[in-house]
Image 1 (cartoon, rainbow, N blue to C red):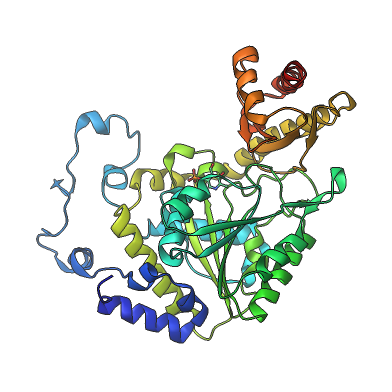
Image 2 (image 1 turned 180 degrees about the vertical axis):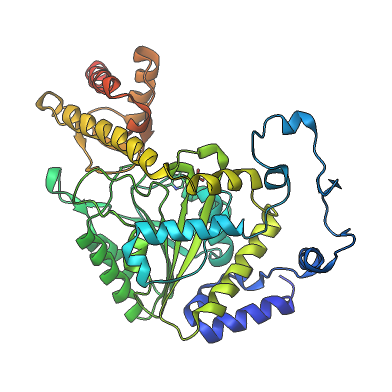
Length: 438
Ligand SMILES: Cc1ncc(COP(=O)(O)O)c(C=O)c1O
């Protein structure tokens, strides 16, 4: 890579002086990232001062607003054309960022004690994961993840960036007493040398597991022990399914609030979004927030990290869709949003309960073991005596039922897509198929 831009050097110095962990964790690309002053800042200045004519930015205007075609406007409803058609800022619409921050504080009591900035808008969580990679993952870097993981992490970190995903056992114990394997996390972190990216996804895809508060405290101890031993750690919380918890012992807030600020050598990142939480998958609207270790002046550090993220957004996709942001911002301002979300959560909770009633039946003992689940969209079973992929194909061909096969023996069922009355027939079909294949 050519020598860094002076703006990148300035950001790196701010990070080095204000938060050495954030500086030291940066990848080579992360160190080179900056947000250019060119057209964007000249255009921002023009918005403030060019009171006669603004001929700076690459959009087309007419009669004081964006140029627009009636065939497009016809579908915008009451959304003002400027809020749909103009570019959004690289960091996202300011109102949306503030509204998401307020939501985070409302729903995550532990975050009220964290040093974190205004969430930066991403093109949903997948993009947030990629941005984390851009800033922090060099070829060969170790990314530690529980072994029940969203497979796309491999494309994001291994294929795109040459990172090395290392997994550890997700669950300790068995049956109803099983829980998150804190000891396995300790061992995985202890095995690291210099730099580790720890990627935690709860509620989890594929298992639908959300840890207890005690388990997250155990995670914090493991992180602190590794940092005490000299490692620098980036802890990434993928909170895609945040808020969908169905049991009393599942932690109701994000682990981020409990892990952030754990140690001077630990930087935390929270990735979350409207996609799954507000059921707007295709709007592609997510957020990235940084949780700093204790430092004297968090403001400039958060600003420097934000500029680097903005540079990565600018260089990758320029900015995120304004229309999606406008819709999510308006929804967050709706007085009835909370009641609407609660109603959908209850629906999903009823499905999760029904799944539990059905899958744990004595009659299915020989067919599968159930991984603990208490949250999210999914649950997993480990099937006995048949290959998961062969079972999946049999279910498709003979029963017209679609599930996901993972590895040799795991089957993931998205109960988020099943009506309560569909749940029993689905598991009956799985059981029937297992017996047929055997
Ligand atoms: C764990 C996890 N993280 C992230 C995502 C991607 O979310 P988004 O649609 O917001 O990119 C998914 C989607 O399946 C997921 O399961």
